[in-house]
Length: 268
Image (cartoon, rainbow, N blue to C red):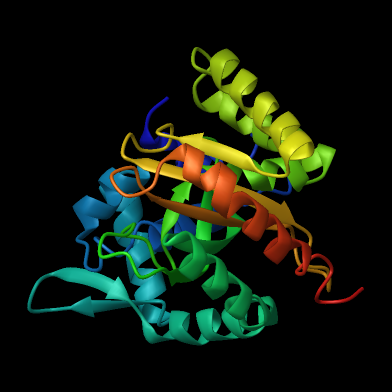
């Protein structure tokens, strides 16, 4: 299964038979999602390629988003960057995640003890989005930070989310993954089912070289409460400095204990 696990085309984000699904809105949001840490400025043709949309459609969408302040057109380069209206939205969204502030000391302690990167993540379609990240003292660490996006199906963080989400949400995720790549789905389904059982039996999910060949990671999912969706915390590092055995024997107990303290922390 390709990188499209984390890049759904707009028409694929909702079932065609769902009469409540607004395709135009989904396409506009997909345009915004095309930007990232390594794609801070994009031209219409680059956005069209990333979203799988006609350039004429993208031109109308970028014009609308620019008018509303969600995009800013840079005349010198002929490209767009995210606009100031999104800053206000993101500030409100992150401000509502008080769990980040509460979790930070525990995440930092695990990162120091395991000499690894520890991240707090939420689901973003078929990806996991980092909302906080703490690093240990190692000179080499994962190139991930707040806002980074990783695979939902192949990363330890994503698998831990799937392990603790509701049966209904899990079935929806499985349907979307199956539709994305029917041929690869049976093997991927087996791996996800094992991850759910793994989380139940040993308290965490693992991904040793499955998301990236050079990365080992474990993760634990939890329910913060307070109306927030499930979240998960991972602990990982490049395999050159940390292997799976160290993570399981040393980091796992500390990570499980830290996440246990976050369960229901935001209240009813």
